[in-house]
Length: 369
Image 1: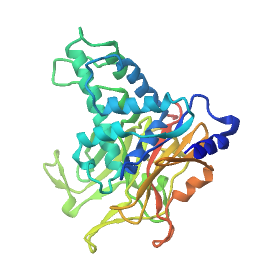
Image 2 (image 1 turned 180 degrees about the vertical axis):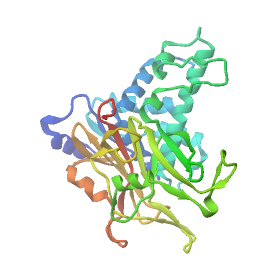
Image 3 (image 1 turned 90 degrees about the vertical axis):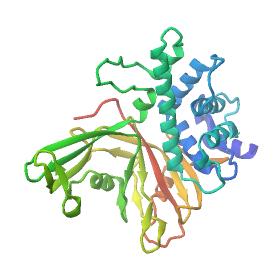
Image 4 (image 1 turned 180 degrees about the horizontal axis):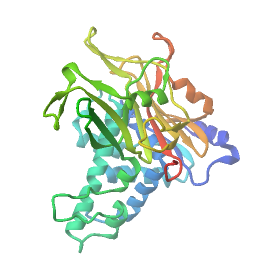
């Protein structure tokens, strides 16, 4: 590995980012689905910084219970505190904890990186919420780490309306969608808000993220079997339905729905469609009022012809350089290489490496009107 390490350092030359570490992750049989997501999250700088802060605040609590959050914080600390700038680390403790916690990931079968990402994010949120609740119910024993780890706590009222807890996980990843339905008989509009940690987009041949987002938020007619029950009319009515992003997240995670169930085949098929994902993304068609701009910093790539087999790797942007992470192997790539993972223009192509999960970070702290 020494030669590979020095090769990466040579590629950076005297531009090697100060204090940064680039470490491959060992694969334990079928853990590429885990490694690619961990690399994307490690180079999500706001997330990494808050996780390391959490580690610093909690490392001296002797009776702290081990969980996925503490194991992930340990792993990130292990990487960031390495004396060497490059190399390989075995995330053994984290993977063991993951398998202990969720039997889905115990087998040696091919796993879905998106399922792992969703499980991990939700698990981290649950842990932080429980810690925040425990700190509020027992303020005398709450440590400074509880306050630092979870950000400001919302004081709960005694009434039925309780403000949800807002942890640093929510601040980074959570957005709000508004589901609007307009009855075509009485014109009454009902709106329902729902939170999300990732957007799942249907894809089409030779399309782009922008067109997929436009389709996501386009107006759909509910009629025939899909009629809407209007409370005002007290009956089923034809209606218009539309989904909009009410509050965009700081970190926007986009999942391209590359696996489609084909009735005739009786199984899922991977869609290798070419979907262009830009390095800079504007959420203009989906927002309620203002534009929101994002910059791409990581891509989880699925390599393989079907949903139940293959391999995962990740592309990561760090300090204006793009890097390619394939388990233990790390190398620098040119920005133009990212385009080779858009997908295939033709159905039968030898290229089976396609962008699957995209990670964008918001540019600036407010929406531009």
